[in-house]
Amino acid sequence: MTKLKNIKVVVTDLDGTLLNPQHRISDYTKSIFQELHHQNYLIVVATGRHHLDAMAIIKTLEIPVYLVSSNGARIHSPEREELFAFDLKSDVVKAALDVEIDPEITVVLFKENVWQTNRINERLNAFQAELKYRPELVDYKTLEDFAAIKIFFSHENHEKLVALKEAILANSASDLHHAFSLPTCLEFMDKSVDKAVAIERVLEKEGFSLEEAVSFGDGFNDVQMLAATGKGLIMGNAPALLKENLPDLEVIKTNAEDGVANYIASKILNKEFVMD
Image (cartoon, rainbow, N blue to C red):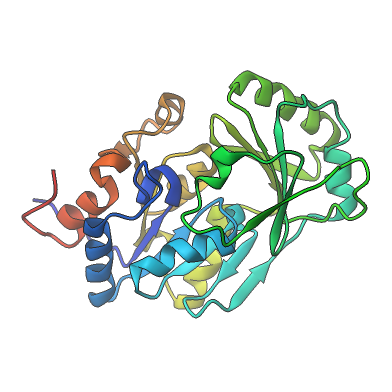
């Protein structure tokens, strides 16, 4: 059993990665992360989720965790102190939304304490075990303040989102970059915002390098993070296109199989027994 050398930091995405298909952290995964903490590894969760939503999840680990949220637009310390914040200006968001948008597409502006949306989407609500981050129904035609942490679109038809992405970038490519966290979820952030950049900020603060970090992810918003760290691992449940785009990276078990915890147990903690 080969143990990874020189790894001091564990970085993980949430949905499709650390969380099982029921959007929960399993008891086994929790026990492995508590062992990581006891062995003095630095732990960073890097997610597209809003910080209020993500904090309710990582709290269940019952250990200190740095949180990179909204794909890098927010960084919080293990004590929940805000270390970094970046919002899109109102005029940038308004320009991005000034395109023809299919009325069936759910549009969300991530605000500090609520998410403003054109339609209530129960599927999105299901991602929260507890509704810590509440939706607010708005009419974008009458909205005055468009400032937001990020812009989020959701629809079951991936091609509709691809067409929307192209329309928005035709107007706003100089201000925004995009990511598909899932084929059904399209997100826009400021050009300067990225998970990898935020993670590097955390590591610099703690005196570590990206080379000393292992990262786990399953979405296209994880690409830079997976490529930047010393070891990047792709979940078995990740889209085939992500695996094709990062052919040099190892693919591990799925989130339904506790893939992250099993890998950590065998390759980092050097445990003989792992969960099937």
